[in-house]
Image (cartoon, rainbow, N blue to C red; front, side, top):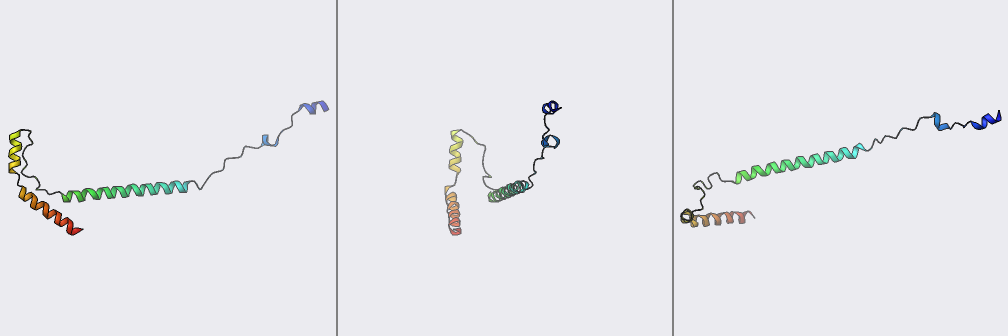
Amino acid sequence: MEEQDNNMTPSTPNDDQQPAAPEEKTGAMGPVTGIIIVVAIIILGGLYFWGGQGTEQESLIDPNFNSDITEPSDEPLQIESDLDAFDTTAFDAELEADLKAIESAL
């Protein structure tokens, strides 16, 4: 009987037990959620700022600007007549008024 006992392999204690389950990390969702919230706030703030810029620029545009513009042309006679019709004194006066308004705002 001794010979039979030597041929048997002893059972290890791990064979009867199931492998240990991996540990769950519960703290990993906090930083990810925080990052997602911060990125969403930055994106929403950028969209708000970008949307506000468009309305401000639209209010600066004069609706009567260039109301007497003719069809664009490459013809020299048309270009010359446009230059002759351009009133530089009114342009200079408007430019000076705009510059004074900007300087007074500073």
